[in-house]
Length: 294
Image (cartoon, rainbow, N blue to C red; front, side, top):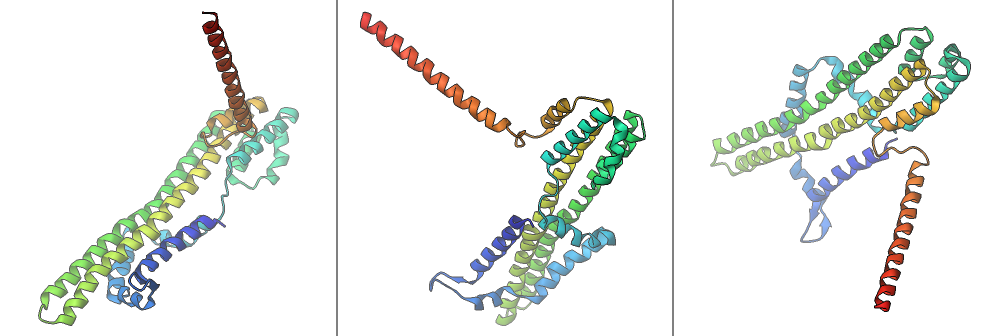
């Protein structure tokens, strides 16, 4: 489970509620203050209006995916670039030693559909250009499908503040329509302000974070599948497993390091610093010796 997402949501909601209930004069939490922020008409305008326009904008299938999206957000990282590279290198070693047809026995052990289907094409001796085209097409469809899922929440994030503003206008109309009634004046002002609050919370605490986390999950999956594509094509070309490993690690961002490379780099930096200190010390000794001779 992705604990960070759950803690972030609890932290955001908790601190907002803390700001609503904390009495600065008495320095204590007053739960009675929450009643001032609960307004059913405001909820109906903001939440109901947002859901209504989303139903107009998107098909029913987009709403059925909300449950699966929540699972994607709270689950731990499923795709690991290092694991993908290791799996490709193992398959390349197997193909190097026993030939491409030996990979057919490994297909039953592969759960990832993209890698499984790609290797099936290689085992069936499909031309490398056709294999690349098929894999690129699947990646393009994946990118478009995930972009549509993110657009669902991005649109909701844009609609929610808009309906908050609509609720504000409704509250102002109610307030200005009956200036003589003090109770109606206060109620209209409450509706005017609370709808804006509801719209901002719905957009910035729910919709936009979900879109951002789905984008992060997409980047993880897309990167691993790009590694799989390049690795499978290299296996089909019969390239050396060590060369494939180096090639795939070069495709990774700078934050991903090959195991052992980071330690070697740190050792190299320390050695460089020591050499620099020795050189500096040697220069100082020569300078002092020259001054003494003078």
